[in-house]
Length: 196
View (cartoon, one colour):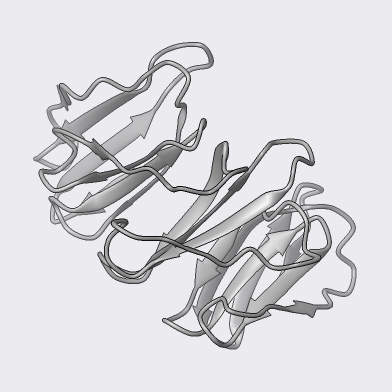
């Protein structure tokens, strides 16, 4: 769900049902359904809006799309890398610059892709030796964090290279990452652990 200036956009789906997007322009008092059809196998997982009109959506089967009209329509964008069957997460720092992480669920590898032009072109930034990337969050154009089967990793050069960060006490996979600046990063694990 995204909320900017009283507009609320909600996207999602039930298992084996087509996805849906619903929109409120008055803070949730009334709702309309977007006419945008979401294929049943795409399972919308993430949404990031920059204002009432512009944003991105991602999901399964490598589904990535852009809206410029407040989710009334979506334009699908192909990310041209093998192994990005499921988009686990995305983070855009501007409407043009962002990253997506994907792979094949349950251990089938991972891909990190970066765009600096709103998804028209992509750079493969998949790190060597870091399997199954799951979550991503960037502070700015240089500093960002990803999770993998090996834990937490940090970049200081926009994703060109990644270094591992030891998280004392972490016993399970990382479910989410949220950074507030380069030094204040919060993660939670699938075992209910919370770390700063």
